[in-house]
Length: 327
Image 1 (tube, rainbow, N blue to C red):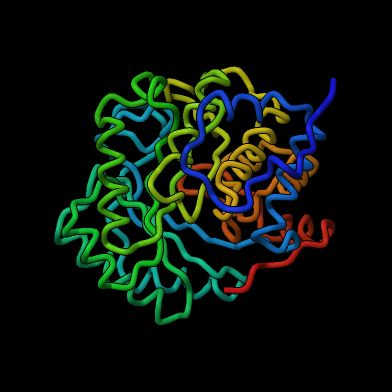
Image 2 (image 1 turned 90 degrees about the vertical axis):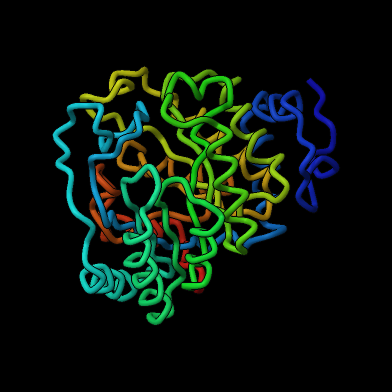
């Protein structure tokens, strides 16, 4: 097979007109060719040695009224997760200070809500203000937002808002019925209009096909502006959730997904998010080579599922010759 000069096909600046056929052609490339293109695109926008270090804290766990089929925090499923009240501002800021001491440059807070109530948002805004006083970047994921709520978070100093599309538009109704794809797009539009950076990605390994992975990336890469941060999650299977017994995803398919995300959104930070305990060090190394340049770090748990320990991550990054991205 003859392969055209890959350098001629690597986007120098982000595009917003990707087609599914083009994205599918990237997935179909021989792995070495795909990795070469992804690493070359990555180097045009980032130092390939650097990894952005984030820490994620659940400030309100469980009891969520949404029926997301992958989520142990949904009130619809028996997963052993107990609903908790919103953490105090002081407790959250103590965790943020510890994260900074451990090397994190971004502190992310998550609440299991369909959408925040105004009096809860008062506390969240105080948390954001305190995180900023620690000279950390701030990120929040609180469910759906109105335009006014997004404006309040911006006024408090929020840097990033996470709201994932999760999967393709076609597969979405197989995963969630309590909110629509358009609901998610509306929240992203409110966040962007408020001047907050967008953190938006999806989950791989929920029984979707490659066509669905292509559709998810098309939805992300054709937004009016690419998300500044793109978390790609490998499903953490939790007993009691509808997708807890899905077929294991081939690790190389996950690597391909990372590489295609890098090529279609070359200036975005691509994060290895949930599911890293299921990945070997070698798989993670390939993901970094494919263009991933962010991880969640410093806590043994991501919300309610496992995360590699700080010591293991430090060892892996040292072995790879990688360093923390400056804050």
